[in-house]
Amino acid sequence: MKHIDESRLEEDLTYRFNYLVEFMGFGQEDIDVIHQSAPILAPLVPGLVDAVYDKLFTYDCTKRHFLPRQHGYMGDVPTDLESLSLDHEMIQFRKSHLKGYLTRLVTSEYDEKLVTYLDLVGKIHTPKAGSKDLDIPLVQMNALMGFVADAFVATILGLGLDADLQAKALRAFNKLLWIQNDLITRHYQATPALA
Image (cartoon, rainbow, N blue to C red; front, side, top):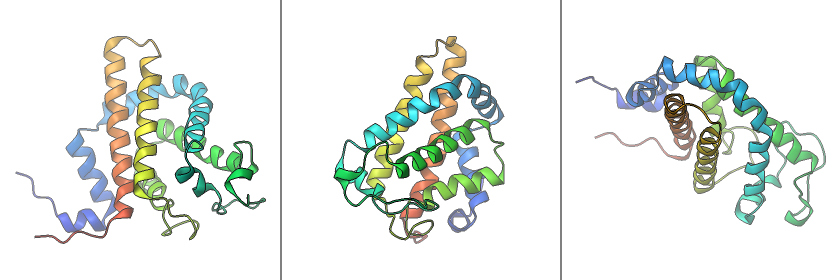
């Protein structure tokens, strides 16, 4: 039986990532499949980003989080939900960030730099990083990740891949998104007491 230092899981990002990767069996074959999918998925990213924002704008509880100034955005800020449209300059700014995120998922080396970035994706949706006014409830983050995961599944199923490659791609992206989800939720909880 392998010993895992549970307190280190909460304090050491690399240790946590390596544990998740090992536990889930996210290996080089998964990374290779993800990288190989980049040229196929790249043309579909704008449609996926639009679908995500269409969904986020369907509910007031998710749309309201786009009213505060986003970190790095210097333009005009909308004053209320009614004046915030999908073509607003700030939403275009946010869409470009989501496009960049999705591109990094499928093209980056899975090294410490990417792990730090994936962790920041979770942290930046809380007051711990980015805008102090941005505090997305965990239920909204979970709903978004579920929507994104389903969109990846639907996209992969629609590519017409042979059964073996399709299965490998589905499994690889599933593991990757579960790792990302952990690196989001860790910023929403206090460090657990260890028995």
